[in-house]
Image (cartoon, rainbow over all chains, first blue to last red; front, side, top):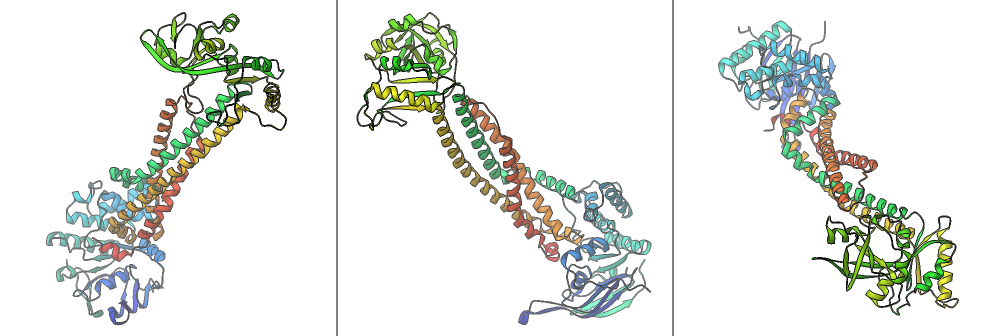
Length: 233
Length: 402
């Protein structure tokens, strides 16, 4: 049996030292397998974003172990974490985080540039990724010419272009109206189902979290609930 | 990857055209100043050497008074030479041509036009010593020299001032109170080693000048062209021996005249020239430094402005080194563009200046290459700090940045 995709063992994260020490995460044990669709909920300050940043290798745990595909990664330096992000992870953010004055195609090509892929291949893969999120024909549009929902689709295409095992979505529908939100969730669900991409998503909306098949709830830096749930359709 | 980075740098620079231009203006001015200074300096050095080379043989200038540049004499006025001294020297085997000179400033008039100029009294040999061709007409005849005839040769500047485009040959001009027939015109020589106008002169037989303009029998200086096979030291020695004897200077007593080798003056002028060029260039190099600081300043602003972009790039897998490279390449490209514009502007300024001074324009490839390399170096040195700041950004903080 292959090792789980993600395994957190007694992970803690503190900021500051001494009197000013703030504990964002404490004693988190968590295993996520390949192909899961996990939603993380919790009030603000509960540690859900910190957990997300650690899983996404943007941050490092202060204590405990983080195993990615069975390999300890908590002590990797900045460049090795960059490599891991480049080759295994894709990010989708609440604020879309697209490069403003670059076309949709250029935005999607971005991770492929850092993978060192030649231009022709980059362009073909970026086009394919844009088609997958339903944006064929809008390749040359700037983010300012796209609606919020379309911008988030470009961001998802960018995450997809790098061919990741895991997509980390931080409140992906936070800036969208409910109609667009459900479209985006259906897209993520479809990618999870058809492409087998593991998705970990932070949200604070119950109906958005309902798209996932597993729900994690964080309270005061601790994982307080971990339940499987029927997938919303 | 480097190609992508270059493309990205150009895109960013072109996107903010005005800002990019203002950013590199310091480098543009610095490089332009260095290039212009060095090119003009080298051009005029070459001109000094060329004008001495043009004399063909070693030319000596003999002046009364002790050695030195500037106004001759000093305390006690040394006696002038006479035409007899010139005759005695002319007999020396080392000497090819000798031209005695008696010169002074005069006003020359033709019709309504007049010009203040220098009148040189000399002989036909003056043009031979100077290796100076006639543009039209003829040199002095021997009879005109001995009789002190009222004839003259005029330089290109005087010709232009008095006659414009008209033909001056056979016309009569008035020099002070002397009516004098123009028998020839001199070819234009352009600016001299000090930038003076060498064509602003009227040449008359020395006896005419002595008798009718200056009212004396002096020879104020002599120009001597040594024979080609004679070493200048030997020539100088021979001239000194004759003159000491004729001027009755006792052994152990200092000369009361000077013999100057023009080649020596040329090398001294070149020396002064290169010192000046060096000084001006180092001032210009300081402005290049200031230009570098300008680039660093704007790159720091740019890093702050683009913090979010840097965060995105880090999130999708850019390494710190790749972010560093991006900003460093941008700074170097900016600086190099400034350098290229500066090289163009500097060569333009040098071209205009040299044409104005009638000196041939000969840009030096090594100086251009050096300026190019130096602007790249400025980009690297002043781009490194902002680029490192970009590379050290924390991706989480950068993504949160508004």
